[in-house]
Image 1 (cartoon, one colour):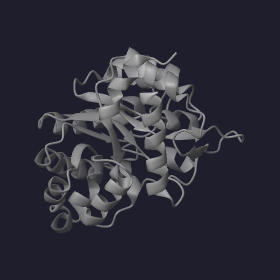
Image 2 (image 1 turned 135 degrees about the horizontal axis):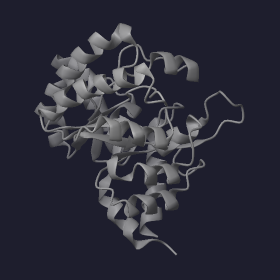
Image 3 (image 1 turned 90 degrees about the vertical axis):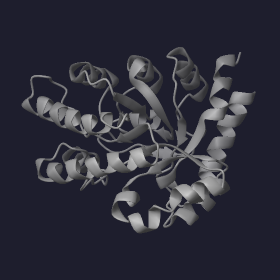
Amino acid sequence: MKDQRIAQFGPRLAVCGWSLQAATPADLVDRVLAAGFDRVQIDLDPFRENPAAWDTAPDLFARNGITAVSGMFRTVGEDYSTLESIRATGGIVPDATWAQNLANAELTARNAAKLGLRFVMFHAGFLPHDPKDPSFETLAGRVRQIARLFAARGITLGCETGQETAASLKAFLEHLAEPNVAVNFDPANMLLYGNGDPIEAVRTVGRWVKSVHMKDAAVTKVPGTWGTELTVGTGQVDWPAFLTALADIGFPGWLCFEREADDRRVADLRAGREFIGKLIAA
């Protein structure tokens, strides 16, 4: 029997703007609408890199009935070609890119506040599993610095899941103890990285989950390599169980559809939204 509580998520569906690979704000508006959405988790990097073009986005959104509900930013030098490359280059772990990442985060926090956003997410990088590891406290200190830039503007900072187990992430968040640090939970990333069952994981980090990426995947058959990202509804995420788990933890945020593979992004995102829409309405 369907859990009737999942109907609450119907009005809270959004799309990840970067998944649509738009070159301009007008292009983004067209693709958001073509994918069947009117809410977007916005890529904040273009606002920092090309403000002359992207400062027109809020007006275009308003004229087309689109709302930016949250944001995302990347870190310098990320290389997702292999699990090992992203472990070495991801997030704010590398010393060589830390100063630039901090400067970028400060400007991003300002831009997010101007856009009226209250939640912004990023990949912090691989968390050391052992709190006694010197790099554990180094990373915690860097997350604190970035978190406080956003806290000063009333914005929650979300750490993306997948690069560590749920238990490791929970231990890190408890140690961090920053009131505005939360989790952007991506069930597919748990499968892509081979870090456990998404349903169990979302319950483990439950009280920190403030945003969700709706993405699907299949686990790899070759240990040490990526799993395969798939259109929502065609992979191994148990969506009825996942939505029920979100209801159980009292999830308050947006469910943002993300697609980072293949070249049919608009069609894939629309198909995923329709799948979840039918699941919620059934």
